Image 1 (cartoon, one colour):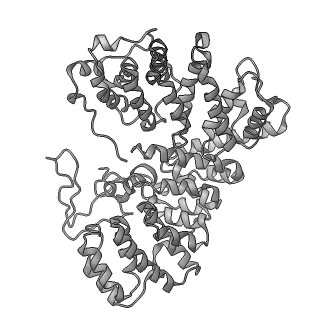
Image 2 (tube, helix red, strand yellow):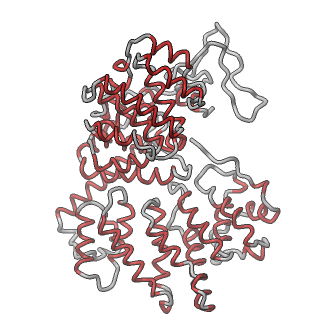
Image 3 (tube, helix red, strand yellow):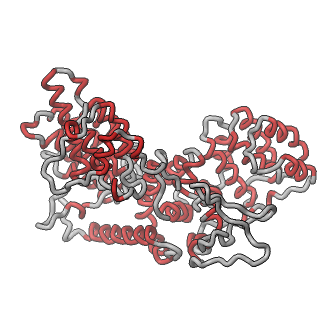
Length: 558
């Protein structure tokens, strides 16, 4: 996984370093006056944003553990028009598995700075100082992580309705309309956000019959859970539901509990395949599909900012969606494969990007060659998605949906388009696939790709491609992808070495002796192998970690 560099406290001013080392008093009723105590100015905002983003990215040294909390509070005390945009951008970059958006220490600073900006606008008559419209616009952004939108809603609720004397109540109708417009869509992949919307609207005074109908529809269709809104003293009235006597709601509650248990197993599994959780997911197929899509949606929102996934849940999500042939998941999966290749690999699917995603995509799309052809001829389609579609096409050849000869012709046409667009990753992928066609007429265009330096260095040699093409023997049908079956998640994932083998120590053979594995003079460990020696992807890693090479030094983790 890709992480930021080490905590760069040494690059900050003396006063900021002092703030970073300060322990935060979580019992204090009022926050520190950071502006006066540490002589902060608006020029410190970029550094404060850099400090605040570390919460949840990696383990910070104990000496600086509270630095992100200090930075987040300090931002709220500076000029709102300069601080709020950065704080809103930071919402997209936080890893919500580590940040509690409903903690007072998280949403109070954003609430306070937005309130202060609105008060300044009222006092001066300058509406440009008011940051509440900026928060409302951010709430409308549907690509934001569901938890980030929930955090914004938590901030906007008191600003637009509960604030004393309702000084900013003119924003309340706009806030409610945003929630209602979202609830009308009921987009798959935003279940947590809809739960927040239903919770907010359920307390709205004078709800119209149309609003009540939207609330009921969201709950009945599984986009929100009415039982979340019962407190310790009894039931909170929600759209007239009789929770204790409604058999349908009780059944939905049971399914929801099962979903939570399944995801817990997916998150906690390590070196053990959670077979029972997969079998349980099959029993509630239609109910769990929106939850699986939401996992991909939220992880993609994180990956856009380089925040890596922290467990295997997304791996199980895409495999189960392929098994279920859930076409409704296709837009979300395509969006995840539209990121830069390194983000897909580092933050989302890891090895699964190249080994599983082509087959998963082919299984969900089905036998629709036009779907592939249109997107591979369109230079505007993201490069990473096109690379995956090229590999996925092999499944259609294996199922004889596309003739092998047609596939070979298409590859040549796609390569011409990719060369004009100068897409290096795609050109490299196509050159590798063309090398299996055994067609010497492709040698000139392959040479052109190498001459233009559009083939990734070290991936394949020109002489090897020319030798394979001159052989006039096709090896397309012998490709690994053609033999994969994604209709059974247990059979597909259950055989992975990650789940079937326990970590074990590795004793290298006495002959030949391996040279030192790492360059101890360098901060970063560098794998060194004997000349001419290679390590198979599924072989034990020579670093003696007990992991497979592909899961260790093969990924640069060592």
